Image (cartoon, rainbow, N blue to C red; front, top):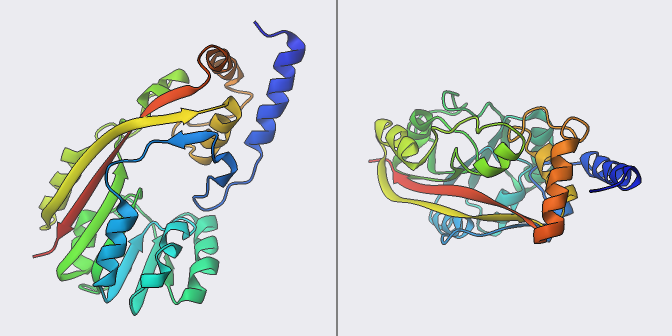
Length: 256
């Protein structure tokens, strides 16, 4: 059991992690302290291959543009991206516009409209952002391809429960995603799901992670959940790390 002085030192340390800036979708601050297992597929590799044979590409929910920039060497003539979170939109615009990318501020949800005309793109990609499958189908050209990697709605359920909460979208799984995609008139070419482990080497890394992804533990602050954090600190002392289960899914579909 920690004494008062040791507990206060941890409180101050974790508050510093809580106040660390986070922009776009960049977790470099906790590199090596948070280790995520990788699925057997490569979303980026698949996106690259598809982009090489495309003339017009849309990236839905580009975040700060980090991932899209990794593909800049194979950008086709037209590349567009959407982002719904204003700070990330501004960051993505600054990063991507110099490379000729059209960055549009637009909501991302299962019902959101895309601000583009019918059949504008032969490739739509989406990594971990909500999308309206009907709108994706609408903006795709005939024979156009949709590629998406998504977080299963039950991913990190064990982490949620450490803080007394449940996943907000437990219904979202591969079957649900396939149902919407097929209803939109797209033909599924590839569909996969995967379960792996996310490991945190220290509680401070977890604090940073939870502040960056606020929907995991809504209203998370170090002060509010200090007791739970201390419990996890004891677990790390015994086991050397914190391990939680993540789940991903991937779908590739084509417009007839």
